[in-house]
Amino acid sequence: MNTNIKSALLKSYSYQEYRSLVSALILEGKSTGNTQSDDLLHYSELNESRMNRLEKTIKITDEVLAQINQLETKVTWLVIAEGWCGDAAQILPIIYKMAELSENIDLKIVLRDENEALMNDFLTNGGKAIPKLIILDEEYNVIGDFGPRPEPARKLIADYKVANGVVDEPIKIELQKWYLQDKGVSTQNEIMQLMKSKELV
Image (cartoon, rainbow, N blue to C red):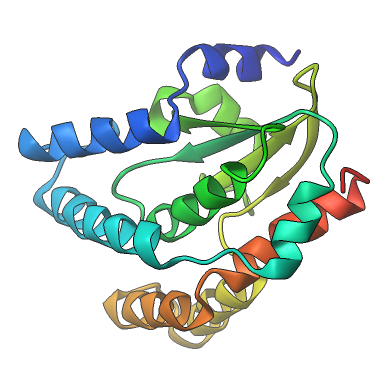
């Protein structure tokens, strides 16, 4: 097993433990992560509301449900996240709902800033973009990874950055609107396409 993965798994949280940690920190006026600021606290509070809503509203499609039911091999879904991350708030509830559908999926969450070595193994264009879902086999070998965003959301941000040179508040609002309209379908499909490509389902 990769040493960085082994170390991260020892510090991992269940989904409910992660949610409880983020909530407890918010009550203390804090966010997860090494950096503390009013902005990060504000984003954490927004994200908690988003996750509460998504847990009630996200539906797993019939097609994805059928694919998950075909999973016969035990896998671990290890997600790198932080409470202040807007993309993590949109994607984690989907991953959680998918994982809950199969006894063969063990979902674990780790904090990016507490697991720098692991994060450095899964950079996106040289950056520490999250969330990052790492799929591990029974021996905790890496099968594949997904994230930080589904392809249409990635393209939305990339195109805006090319045109404007920055990722600012207007595009962050557009991104949240995209997630709302997509209803988690792109994330579900891309994760299952990855699973299929590795012949897991």
